[in-house]
Image (cartoon, one colour):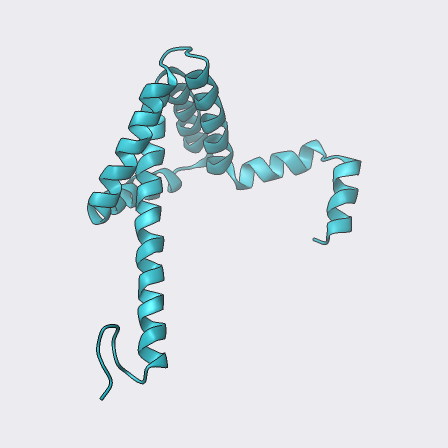
Length: 150
């Protein structure tokens, strides 16, 4: 979609049908965004727990998954593959549960997000290292980093 089409679409507005189609297609993502938003507000304004616990559990989740990336990644994949295999009604129920958890115990929800962040961090750092090593290997005619050419 070009920039002009996007601007025209914003000016025209979005129909109810387009919104329903979007939510139907991206149910998990919509509920995740809502849960993050509601959890952040709940934490900031001390509805049930303060921002200190939320920050601590986010950091703790990130640290755990950076230290134990394989087991964390495996458990997260298992959890999300189970969630994504559900029918729409169950996805909506799970989404509502995520929102309730984010509202009442946001530190638990943000701890899960920390696990996701740490796993993602590890994956992208490792991926970049592999690409860099491959590029160095190909550009130097087969030698590895740290090896001298004679």
